[in-house]
Length: 288
Image (cartoon, rainbow, N blue to C red; front, side, top):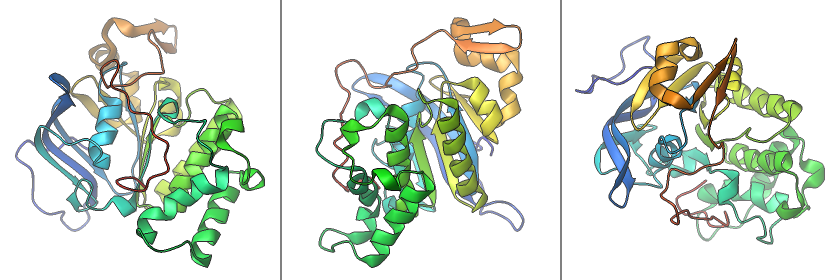
């Protein structure tokens, strides 16, 4: 992974990894408020990337831009070789858990089947291949036995497993996951990260936000540090650099010996107060 040059670059040469994501000169925000400014970033196919940064620093906004859910004010975004949103059927975007209406009457099977909608189109009904894909995805996340359970009856870890199954059922080439391991126990975190690592090993690109710096260093190959701009991008060991941490978190970073802590709330949105959107996650348009 590397930061993109401000002038762009030539087509990938032989031996150079293809880029799953390329942002050049991207600025975006909400209303009149800038959330991200002049972002230049490239993420290759097969990457396993943690996006870290303070609350309101633009982590969720970055995922929305890549997913095509949010349009940039300036600059260009290329995802899987096309403009953001054009290859939505190849992208699995999972928003933060608190953006989901957990009272919506849908069970785990239906949630996972939503991952197949972009491939089905508006008229086709799920077929045998779709049902097999959903069963396989639920089995991989150890939720097949909960297939008929309403999502509102699940624990936090089970909910994240269910939405990870939706992403995997999509058979996507790019995973965009907003805080996939926040608030879950260690065994669940380890299980989720093992699955994501396996997807990256297959050549999929996985980009996930996290507030847990320890988990980012332990589980991810690469990191993108964000605070309204790209502070740094590269190997996960960048998070051991005090200068990068200082630029990313400022006074929000607490260092206790070898341990790092963030002095802000892990549950957050980049959107300004009062403008958060709560998805029922039942509509396939623009999402997978």
